[in-house]
Length: 542
Image 1 (cartoon, rainbow, N blue to C red):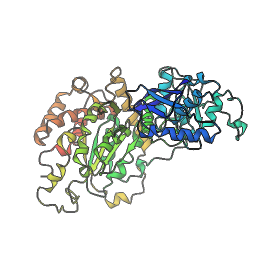
Image 2: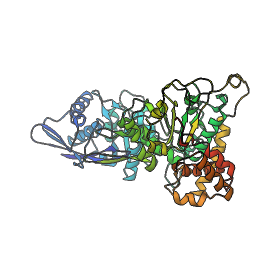
Image 3: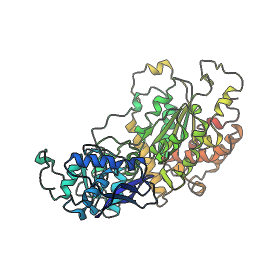
Image 4: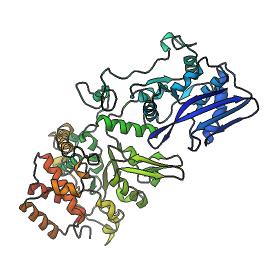
């Protein structure tokens, strides 16, 4: 007897529906075809043990399992459940095998029939709704994640017996060995109101900080009020957050670069619902979501160690997985001790920083991972760390500073809008008990500036903030008065700024004007933007 069930495979951050065809006929041997990897081939052993452990029988005749489309590589152990249900249906141990085609089902089986968690439940659920399946069966640990998608029955299961008894018409009865409260029912996390544009529940507007009932179960973030002094560095981070600019902090060890960088997420605008869905989908595919997770409520902050490989940073592998720059999508990628990273690893970021996505090519597939992140980097100015220190003398030999800086390529520095020199905080400031400005106050200004940019670039999906504007937009929104043009000309000549600094200065000055609520770029905004280009000054580090 031939029976079809349906599973799902993840390629990039998208899911593809896989038809699992199981045919039991006269003969011998078991075959799993359709480009399965070893984990899929081994599923027959797990399926047999799970079926027998629960009082059902495994056929001893010829068994053929086909995973279609057959030209796409299938990997992972989560195909155990659809294969097992297909075997039970083909051997007429399921009362209503035709109902199997109404559902997507995925999950790894233990030998006793328990269901293990999987990766990518959210994109699987999205694809299931897109293809108008009635519902989806996923491990209980992934159920709330998949239940974000509405108009789809999402069942969280912990054992194969729950699925068997569901299709045997016992969904209204208690399951053997369990209380009547454990009847298999769809997971419900929606409210009755729904977003018309994307079809998702607005219950998560509160999760993301919108509306009258924000989440209260989130651990507190480090706050800017805890940072003593460093007013210029705080201002630079505020400008970077307001315009989506990449930022480099350069200064001696112990000056507070890492400490203040970790507070950057606290001043970023809240995730929109669409951004939260995109971010959650990436983390779901990477297996980074905790059990019983729903939407990610905070912008990601990824801080990989400097020994990270190229593939771990950009993504890759035989079955491509998202790397750190994709996990930082809609958030921050913080690279501490920037020159210590492998040069080849840093260079793989150049194209994603421009295109806001990573393309990974393999022989039989090409996958895209989103990568719209802000780069926040920190570094010492020299090997000893004390070049330009106000109190301590640099002990590096001649040329060491430039050599150390050249570990970071010019094209990568070209994509960093703000270069900030950090100086140590003096003792009187450290011992001052007066509270500093908190993150919430700074965040309000950042949100207002982002709202101005959202209105400005409305209708242009490729531009969301000032850092992403192209030359055409710069000519329109970065016009300078004669006084501003003269100031910029003098700065370029006296400070011997590079040509690449010109565009960056205009973009940053536009962001400063937005923070001040000004429609024009005043000379004082230009002056502030000019001082954020430390590394472009001729002779720096000579």
